[in-house]
Image 1 (spheres, rainbow, N blue to C red):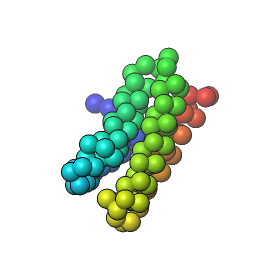
Image 2 (cartoon, rainbow, N blue to C red):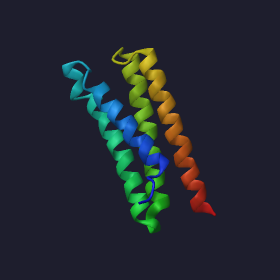
Image 3 (cartoon, rainbow, N blue to C red):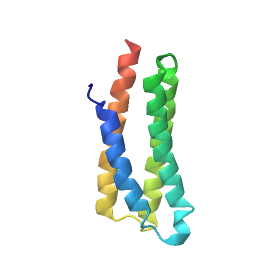
Length: 113
């Protein structure tokens, strides 16, 4: 049995934390900002799955994953500004998205060689 790629392990771990976090947003925001955060996280994960399963489109799928990660960061900043996320929670989320960005960049570099 092969070990899962670190980007999948980190993505799924962060996804679990993020889903628990957005579930605590005020009710009126769960259908607006929380939904956008969750959707961006799921879309990022789906792009990774497509890239891993279809090598012929991997570069395009990873480029789309990068777009989803940018959207996720923007939505998380909005959550901080609206005070649905504490500075500590935002710090953790920023750390996780930065790590995912580094792993994504590394994967993209392997495709260019």
